[in-house]
Length: 303
Length: 248
Image (cartoon, rainbow over all chains, first blue to last red; front, side):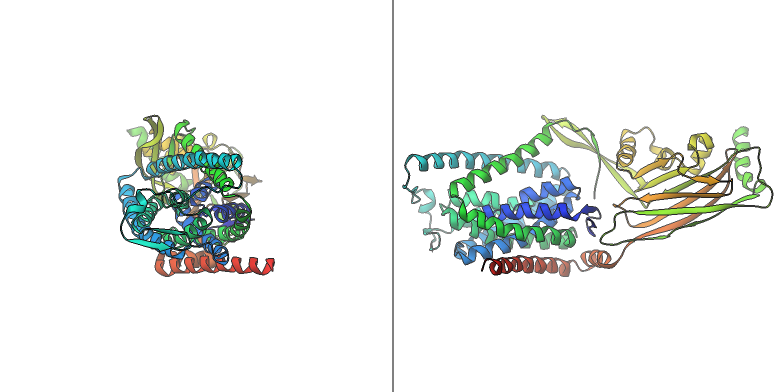
């Protein structure tokens, strides 16, 4: 069934879009990532203009994150206090990121920068997560029954403005979460994603939060940052396609519920290995596109 | 100089002394509505040749039908390898080119008219699409890409002519249409001369929810953005509730 999208101005198969939304929703529920890093390139592939793809996926991520976070609220796996602290940083970062994005757009070459950002960040994070998860899995196999210790004292724990985050079992300074939120918000705005794939590892490895709480908290924070991005895109560029978003999110919200269930049944280390592999695959694909000589050197510019 | 003048005079006066044959044509529809399930549209163009005298038998009669989509400024990007990766290195503003162009005729256009007539009436894509930039790689790339996407097309035997009097052709408009006026031209040719031409417009427009969403997004961006977020929130909450009920 073909459907004509009013803002993107292209006709696409509605079932393909539903499928895309579903896959991304499952990932969103499983890993606590918004899935923007995956859905945006997938939308390019189906023929949606890049500007519309970026703006609309932000809108779609809001829906799948709301759905995901509600499931996590029921399980009490959201650290609300940490979520608000991250969000303060996130919104500031997002506003800065938008400014950088528009500045680079005026200079041209914004596509290249976005792709390079993807390749570099996805590559680094994917590789780090994979190595760490495999090590953790091996450790768990070697000495079954022994949990990995979390109360490592690093420089993060010696900063001022300490605050108690009961749900995470942490008593740390608010500076690291605000900075993490800010950096992720900034990158998210430049790359047109929610930033969950950077946020999740940052919460685990920098803040030392338990994996179960990380996912719900990340989703909570992503809702507001992507809602902010959606508004900015809708207001300044008129590139949010509501019809496209609705189809994607019908698939997405269903997928998110399924994903949350899968996520609760899998071990944290297994989840992380899978996310790491997925991140690396997307990174490889984008990287190859930069390296392989294109069959057509010319392309028609879109405004 | 003199030859050019005579040729121009002949081309100008030709319709006068050959006005014995005229085109009468119509379209199956002169309005294309883009609805939510729009999947392209097929327009039937048909007509007849009106004459005062008997059908001349000493020469062939041909019909050419062209459809030109709305024009807009085109920018072409060129990639090259820099530091090992392929990036856009050049951006060229070409000029105004139609988003869609279709030529259909009873025979290959080159067999019907001479290049000078083609240049004057801008019939083939090569004449119609930015012919003043001919030879420029970016312009050739534009034609190549649009032809590949089915947006610039030609049908060498696309027009059917019956008993030198009735003709018809169908133009398939693709699904990814740009809104605006599509100018349809019908040319009557004999002995390489354009005897008559008829021009009309096909209006392509979004309707219903498509129109409403498009207008809202552009005229009330704030409300549109808030509405998008509201829908996203409701959809997310709704799915969560439905799944809770299912699991119970």
